[in-house]
Image 1 (tube, rainbow, N blue to C red):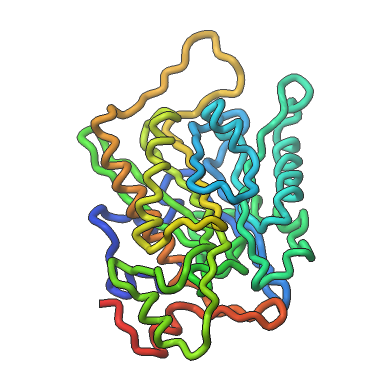
Image 2 (cartoon, rainbow, N blue to C red; image 1 turned 45 degrees about the horizontal axis):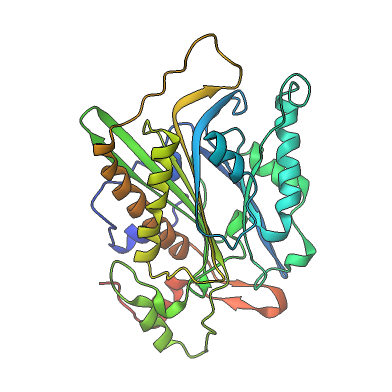
Length: 354
């Protein structure tokens, strides 16, 4: 996507399953992603929007679930997702101190599309998730404004940039520059072919823990570095999962729990100060907002087939994290704080991925 060099362009293939055409969350039909990037001096932040489908999401909800690996975070809307098992708004990613504003804008965005909200029907449940970009960004300045959130929502596409863009602009990953990464996997079952797509906002990890395809690359990079890095993990990762696999919200929750396998394979030990939040949805079934006259038919896979999805999400999460590292560019931000890009360090110190 956008001719960015990703992990596979370095000859590294993660896992066994094949990726989709874009190897991104948008391989799931109907899903689109939009960014607004704010990068100048002390301002290193932004916003990312994920649309689950191209219709009216409030009127045609999708099956959804969330899973908290470590709850050091400020996400909104997950309580209702877990109670009702549906998603009824786009998903917004941004930095920690802009969650409230982004939530307010997302509510207004939904009100404009649905005049019945708060009048003839109930209210709406906005989904906003965050990571803390305060090392590179002056987070207290709250640079993200209403127009930036709306711009991201209204300008989504199937192809999008990764790395230091959107909500990922000021994020760190394994003490290096991180941000937005994505990947997908195709699941071939007897009754059809389905897609598992993942988008991550990576802002976690200790450099010496970084593994790439079972190689301790982080240790080699740290050893080669002239400058010293304080090995402290107080970041977070937000993992957004999309699939067209027909699953119940219970099955989807089981799948989301397996995202930790991909996270840990990159080296994360899920530290105390890092918040790991997973939000997922399935587009296979649309749940109408208005009550129907009869029962709803919700197809689901058999539990014996779910291992394929477990494998797919682990592989996609692992590759999405690595893509967030390899597509990122070096950033110099707040107070001159700098974080280099992994690809530059590998080249500079002649470190091989083989």
